Length: 144
Image (cartoon, rainbow, N blue to C red):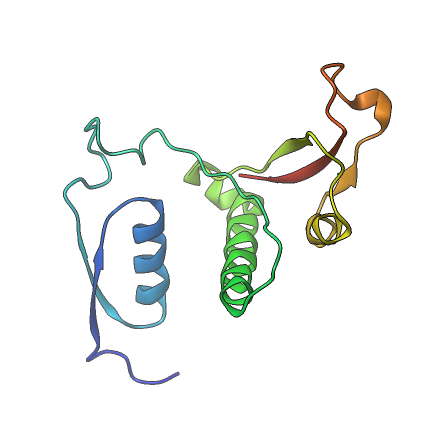
């Protein structure tokens, strides 16, 4: 690993993303300072992190930016899965909860392929759909 001890990085924001980035940078040897209006433990109405959850929803990859973001999303998924599965980190507040995506039209082949690339994917059977008339739905266990 390269010497990063002289590299000081400021992370702006102490929400889920800011703290996650700061932690990963610190693990890689960077000196990190977190600057934020609200910090963990604060209960300000404008600070969502004490109450916020996260929703993981894959998107079709069509551009180079999508490829980059999809790579980051997969890395984030693996890290969150590692934390959720670690019995020593049960108090970390990370848990995977199955989610169901309902569509008012049948998904395209590209959309089906995009969902199928993620764990716990399955297309719901017609008798599992709500009677309100969703054309089809996909069950994806990606919410954490």
